[in-house]
Structure formats: C-alpha cells, structure tokens
Length: 154
Image (cartoon, rainbow, N blue to C red; front, top):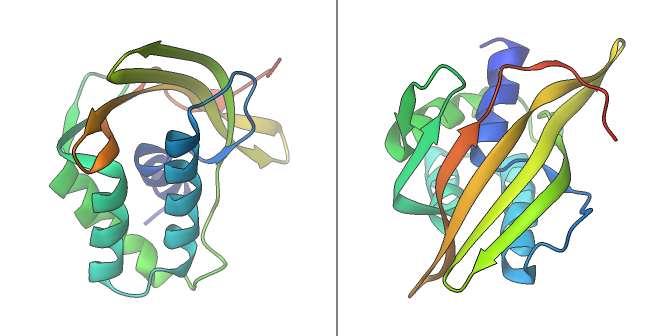
C-alpha cells in the first residue's frame, strides 16, 4: 500500500488532528482525537472495527473527488491494511478547520487535511457531515473535495 493511499484512507476515516480555526463541538472534536489515538494503537481488525464504529454511522459514505462512493465496510477493510505499519509509525494527518455549521441535530465541518512534505503542505479540503444519534455524534458523510495537491494554507 503506497503512502499516498494510506494518507487518503486516514483522511477518509478521521480527518486528522484538530487545529481549529472555528469551534468544533467538543463531542465531535473528541471523536476525531479518539480516532487518531486508536489508529496509532490498533493491533487487530477488531480494533479497527471498534475505532470506525465509535465515529461513523452504519450508513456512512465516503465520496472521492471523482464522485466515486465508498461504503463504511469498504473503508474499514482498507484501513485494516494500516496494521502492517507498526503502531506509533503510522502517518498522522494534520487538520485545519475552516468552517463549522450547526443545524440542531446536524453539524458540518469543513477543513484542510494535509501532511508536511519536503515541498510543503500537501493535501485537500474535506467536508464531514455529522448527525446526533442515540449513540452520540456520528459522522454520516465524508467528502474529499479535490485530489491531494500542494497547498498554500491561510
């Protein structure tokens, strides 16, 4: 699995460490942080399943810049591939939140997700849709708006 594909998978799942410009509701911010922590320590496919289940709704959908859709089960199967990288050495993307919209039982979080390379910050803009469920806040939609490219972050 290439490092670019791993970066995309991580971005699909968790979006990265929050460096909020706008206030993300605490429960959602905690979900991002808990997922990153679990991603670094996961040792089994069951660990990956628990991590995904704690953040994403069962009907979660990921949408690539090309419009291709990925189900939660498909994303989870690909994330299991990260287990081949030793814990603590797995890539951790960074995140810069640029917009948070709240409408009662729904929240939209738009952010830059990126990694630092020799050329600078490389990444994309992402929009996550969250909904309040009986189990708490769960992400239902993850949209990567364009392919990774060199960014000039504000």
